[in-house]
Length: 176
Image (cartoon, rainbow, N blue to C red; front, side, top):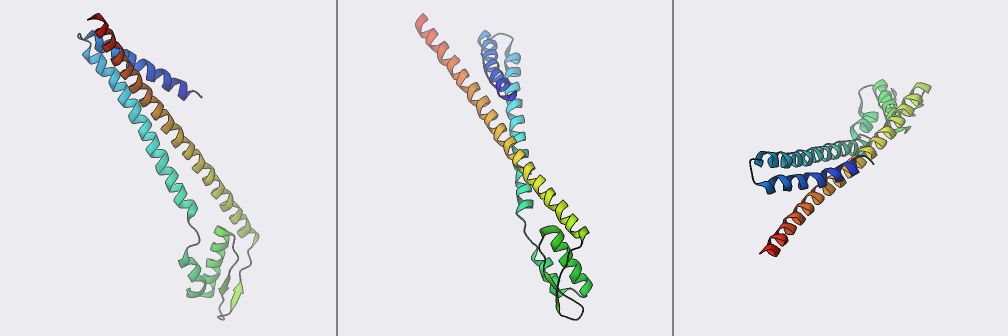
């Protein structure tokens, strides 16, 4: 709500100020470049925000889309000892909430029975994943907002500058 009106104001004042200073054609060449520099810095800043938001959103998306690791699932059968196979089943439950059988010491399959601590750990992991989903949505919103602000800023700046150029040319033609 605050950023959009500020970008509109900046997008209007920058080209008008640039045009006024450039129209004087005097020693104010550096001041005109200063206004152009403000525009370039602002566009660069918005692009950095967009890039950062998109990169973090992609990282969170990759993290959220990972499923069960096949190596860990194979470890339920291939681990050296029955205790290690039980620990693999415990880790799978804590991360994914899936109860799987594992090969015990006597090479028979036993269904893993989660403890209260395992259930609590799964619940913590569940809420952590939901927090990541919320953060991903926040970064998607940030990316969209920065894109909208960049488009508005560049579009208004260029449109107003073109308008001022055409308006001046029209005024020059009328004088002659």
